[in-house]
Structures are given as structure tokens and as C-alpha cells.
Image (cartoon, rainbow, N blue to C red; front, top):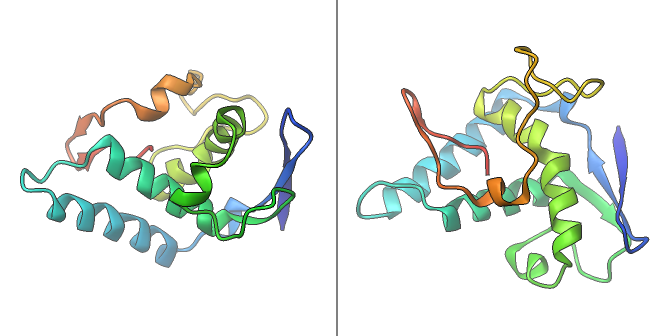
Length: 141
């Protein structure tokens, strides 16, 4: 199953349904974070690293779109898209990255997590430095 996301400029993208995620998807996600952390001398995952992870998630989840750029989604494609489109895509995959990272995904009907609080929706929060947690850096790109 897929769902269509519409953009302000009239373009659209089809996104893979997150309900089909498997343990293999989660393992790949965590492996990519580990590889990036190991590549950095201080072991930190940077905002640049988180953008690369988010690009990889979008590459796996965008199945079709009306833009004239090739799929899979990549950093090179990201550089060509309008910021408004990117922000819509980032919000669309937030539940996916929450699931992959082991966080509670927001309820799609209410927009809140299980505690009743709304998830952060500010575009600036997408590039905020990762918060340290007991089990590692925040993986929400």
C-alpha cells in the first residue's frame, strides 16, 4: 500500500506504507547510524549525518512522484527540490523514523503520541542537534 502526499506547487509523491516495516528495515536504519558514528573521530552523529539518514529513508519510501528527478531519492535530488516540498516530506516520514528508531509513532488520527503531546512540527526541529539518550543519539532526522 502507498499513500499520496500533495505539495503546494501541485506536485505529488507516493510513499510506501510504514505498516510494512520489518526488523530488517530497523536493523538497516540502526546500522547506518552506527556506521556514521564510527566514521566520525569523536563518535558523534552530526546534523549532516542525520540529513543523510533522512535522505536514505526517503529513498526507500518514495515509490513514485511527479518531479522530473530520478528515484530513488538522494542527497543530489534533495538539493533540487523546493524547501516547502522537503518539509512536507520530512513530516510525512516522521512516523517512519519514529518506528525505526523505536520511538512511539504519532497516532495518524490525532497527531499526538501515546502521552497526548503533539510531535514537534517546526522545520527548524528537523535539523536540531541530536539529544543524547540512554541508548544513543536521537535518530529522528
